[in-house]
Length: 339
Image: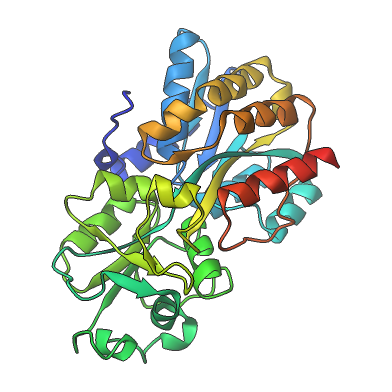
């Protein structure tokens, strides 16, 4: 698969195929099993295909999509070797892994500009404040805040329609933490696309009154059909998501790191060690290929050091932070390693 991978193929058939592939090859010792985030899926899937090619298909890397929450459930049961995650591991998941004796290393892979998207015919909400977004998405809004004009009197007196991923989504967790102030705290009367971001894209593209949010890579692949909203956090005015605004820290509070977590017992397998090393060596190109923001080269070198020295645990203590910058992440990682 080339780096110009078309996100449109990640529909229901792709998800089903990915899941079936795990079942179909689970009986061999040369399988590396990965599952989790739909945001991280195309990056890891491309890395897996390239790695398999170098091994002449002697090693199989199966990559499924069950959402970050679903991936951690499998990971903490010891059912998979690596979990793709679009947020840090949470405390309940840490406890589940600890109870099952699953130790893990946390490896940040890229930064994402979580992107608020609307239909191109929407000419009124090109910029939205965090307060306005919260007013639309907080639990108290359910059944009460239903029209654009209730959010901002200058906007149309028309009903808006909200679109998001399902309850296992790390993207939903991160958005609600950053905007509402608590992960998983959201009104529930939105249309859930589960783990298929392309369905969400189609919904927004076909609905003038739609509003949703997706990973930056999915937006970039569909920007001819949908529009990005500039987000105003009260400090920098309305800021459009981009690699530049993530790197300079002005796109807030919806910048976020995305990760893989590796089961350290599984990492005793030579094939998995080779795959992680291959992934880190090629991470920057893989990440750029899907329009996400790569970390500095020193971050991937640090990841390999963490992996080799078995620096297990997380720098986030089970908390999903909002408004994290790239520099914040690198400082956290450095402090954890020094300790």
